[in-house]
Length: 494
Picture (cartoon, rainbow, N blue to C red):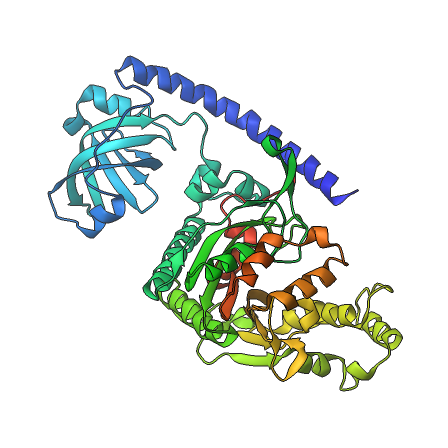
C-alpha cells in the first residue's frame, strides 16, 4: 500500500474515534454551559483585568496579597467542600483553591460545573499550602470561555505526531517543551534583530510578489496578478532587491521574512520558510564570517543557555574558532586524490559505486556537487565554513582573486545541514550580465533587467549572507525536524 494512502486511512480512523468520544464529552459540556448560564455565568465572558501573568505573580509573590489572575483550567480536584485546581496562561501553572465557605453556595456550586480547558478569571489572596505550593484562595471568579471539547488525554500531551502538527494549538497547551521551543524561537529572533540594529544595520522590507523569481536557483511558486494580466512569483530570495538598496546608499541592511520554494518536504525543507538576509557594504565574505559567529554564539548563550547543545553524536560545540575547509579538499578526501583528473565516465562510475544515483547526463561539476551534498555535507557536524566552492555554481558571487574557477564564498554547515551561505558579492555589472545570461541558457528575457541596470549605477563591494532561521532554531533547540520549530508547518492534505 502506498505510504500516503496508509497515512490517510490511519488519520481517518483516528479522527472518527476522536470525534465519537469528543461528541459524548461535548454533550456533557453543553449541559454544563446551560447550567452555568442559568446560575448567571455567561459562558463567553468579556475583559478581565489581571494583576499580571501567572509567572509575574509567582515572581512577585507576597503572602496575603490580593491578585487577579486568568488562565485555562488544567486540573480539577474536587474535595467535597473545597476544590483545588491549576490555571495555565502560557507563562506558568498556578494553583487556585476554591472553598465553599469563602465563595458562597451558588458560586461554589457553579465552580463545580467547570471542565478542564475552561478559561476563568480568579480573584483572591496568595497563600502557601501545607505541601508548600503557592496558591490563590478564591474570593470570586468569572467564566471567560467555556471549552466545548475536552483537552487531549487530560493534558498529559498529544502523542499522535500528525495531530500535534495539524492541531498545534492543542500541542502548545498540552506539551510544555513545545511551548518552550517556540518561546525560544521568539527570543532568538529578538536577539538577532537587537544584535544587528546595535551594529548599525537597518531592517527593511522588499517585495514578496515579484515579476521574476531571482536571487537563487529554485523552483518558484507561480501566481496571477489579475490587475496587470501577468504571472507573478512568490520570492525565492530577497537578494536582488537588497543589493539595489546598497546601490541606493544603504550601507548595512537586513531583512527577516518569508521565502517560498516550490520543492519537496523533508526534515530540513519546508516550502515556506523564514530567511534572514544581510548585506554590508565595503566588506566581504570574511566580514560575514565574523558576523555569523557573533550572531550564533550570542543567541546560543543568551537564549539557549550555552555554547554546547545536544548530546552524544548530536553534541555541537560553538566555541570559537570554527573550522574552515576548502570544498576541493573535502572532495579529494572523500573520493581520492585523483578525482579531478578522472574522465567523466570514471567519475560517474565512482559516484554510482559510492551509493549515489548519478544521472548519465550530468557533467563533472554536477557529479562532484552531488557527492558534496549527499556524502560530505551530512558528515560536518561541528561548525564548519566550507569555502572556495565552484564559481559556476554561484553566479552572484565574486571569484577568488587567485583562482577564477572558485567563488569567494562560504557555506556554514552545522549538524550536517547548511545554515548560512555568504558571498563576496559580485558588483561588476558586465560580468554579472554575462553570468546570468549563461545561467538562463542564453535567454535574455529571463534576465532581471531592473537589477542589472541598478548595478550599472555602481554597487559598492559588499559581503552578503543568508541565514535559515528555521534550521538555526532547530539546531540550537535540539529539535528533530523543521516542523518542530515552525508553528504551522506545511503538511500533506488529509
